[in-house]
Length: 268
Ligand code: ASP
Image 1 (cartoon, rainbow, N blue to C red):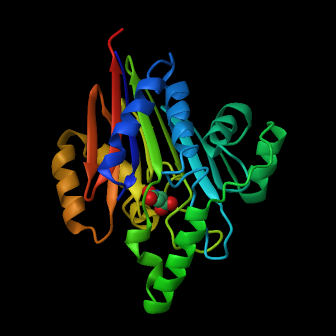
Image 2: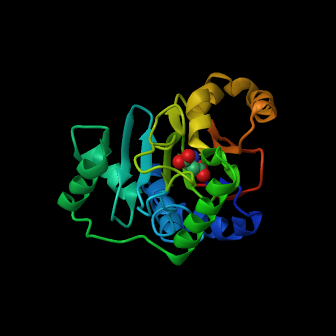
C-alpha cells in the first residue's frame, strides 16, 4: 500500500485542502516515497498559495532566503537560507544524494545548486512584498514583533509511506517577520522533520518554538500515545503548531489551528 499526506502550513485555510488532495493524487503515482514527497513539495513550492519556493515570504531586509529538507530512515539532506532557486527541496535532495554532506547553507547552498544545474530564479511575488509591509507595520506597533504568529502560515510538508518505506520533505520561506540569516525548524532533524523506525513526520509552526521543543523527536518518543502528547503540547503552546505524518500505516494530522492538508492512497 502507498500513502502520502501533505500539509500547507499551520494557519493555512482548510479551503486549500482540495488542492492538496489533488497534489497528493499526482504524487502517489511515483514508486519510491522520496520521489513522491519531493514531487509533492515541488507542486506546493510552485504554487503561489504557499510560503515556499515561489511565494516565499521576505526577510525584514526584503531578501528571500529559503530552508528545505528531505529525510528517509538513516539519511538526511537540507539547505539553509538558500537564495535565487526555484525548488529548494530538490536541492536538499541533491545534498543528500549527490554531496558528501547532509546540510549546506547560505552562499554555499546556492553555489551547490548552480553546480547541479539550478538556474538563477527570483521567487519574489507581490504577495511577499505586501506581507513584508504588513510585518513592518506590526513591528512598529509591538516590539515583540518577531513572535507575531499570525504572519507565519502556508509553509509546506509531505510524508509518504510506500509499503513500509517512509520519506518526508519540508520547504519554507520561513516564519515572517524574521531577520536575514534566521534559521527555523525545517532543516533541523528532530525538530521540523523526522523519519525513524516506521515513524515519519513533517511539522509546521513557529520554528523557534518547534526547535525548543524538538517537536518531531518528542512526538516520536511518545508515538504510542501520540494524541495525548499532542493535546499536552497544544495546550501548553502559545504559538501555532502542526504536523502530518505516519506511525506505521496510520496517518496523523495534528494542528492547534486551521491547517490545509491532503491525502492519497493506492492499494498495490
Ligand atoms: N516552521 C517554519 C519556520 O519557522 C514556518 C511555518 O511552518 O509556517 O521557518
